[in-house]
Length: 304
Picture (cartoon, one colour):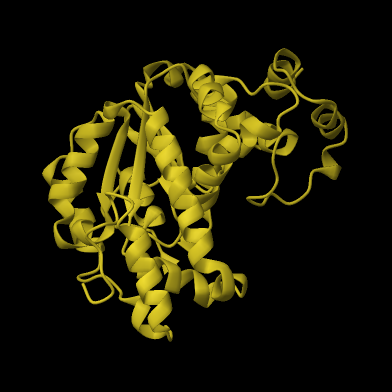
């Protein structure tokens, strides 16, 4: 009997998972939308190899906020630290939400390691950008102290609809939560979404502020020491300083070599995507007025 078979006999797998174990040729190609049984199965080698190392985990890092704000960049910067693994787009909350048989801590952590290895193996490229940061440890780690997943916008929408998932996550990981909220000028964020999705051209402003309300709800559910707000423009202006503060927040020390590598990787100035689309005066006024309702947006203007 193989080690993999022995482990699967001890782990709770849904019926579909058991069927796939008996008929491995039916396992489909793994993508970011394959969850529950397939994710558990794909993660088994990492569970076998790293289970003992999960005991050293001190905190779980998650992301909230909007898409197109720099979450992927921040997640990859954190993932480059030798004591952290932050997977890219696993969608851990969906994994918990969809599972008919509860996901255990070790299964979630091994799924994060699997997704990180998968993304690294694919070259760490996402939506025309490379997140392969030279001089950092993108797949390996020395000691696993912080683990998490970068899935900001979807996690925010999911928690806005099912806030009880935050409690499920707390119970599953059994370590302190560290939530990172990356904020970008709302005009740039909305413009970026409009360029990608047709529906955002008509309803983008409403979608943006509906998710901002979700952020407010989640912020109220978190303790003060569980939430770190990071402004995209500040990160670009002072990468080493902001990243050092962020590492301190999650609970690790950022050494000079790590900060230098990250600083060298981050671009020199923020991209003003708002300048690439046409706006009506009414849209600019509506976004400016709505932004005043949120303390983390109130300083932004169209002209900056």
